[in-house]
Image 1 (cartoon, helix red, strand yellow):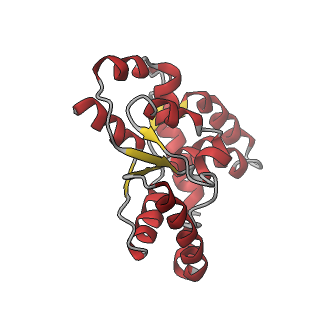
Image 2 (cartoon, one colour):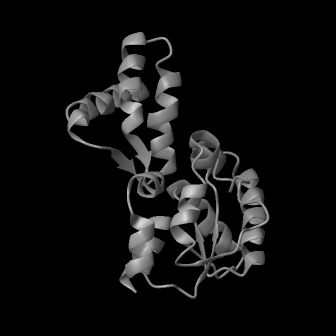
Image 3 (tube, helix red, strand yellow):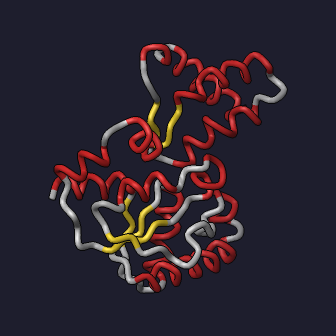
Length: 197
């Protein structure tokens, strides 16, 4: 089974250096959710592997979560960052907010550098929904994506941000299909923009 093989390969690899690092930082909600949340469920009937996963979990972080909790990035942005005139809106990926409870952190990192305009339901799924939704049930993904695109357009934001590549694909497609000019950026890209201005 591919999932079993790849999961065990990842765990074994992380174990080779986990005691030497402060954290494994993942700038992708789907990947970090898989390692932090799904691995424990997957290995529910393999106690040895479940225990090995549990030893890793306190060192796995979504990038904005770690940057907010463990660094002085907010102070660095206040000292060295530029207050951008750009208005942004933030989409909460399902794998970030619903699965890992990470949603305040990216906003806290961005609010000092950008004007944040919340969309009407930032927590509503963008409609990506995985491979099956994208291939066999795209009409559902399209409908949900159109709703998210409308929410984004209503904010008048120049950028929409989320820490998830699946959301990026879905939202970018939905915005393009609906002729909405808002551009998708990962929050790390926006932070870099503020620091490089």
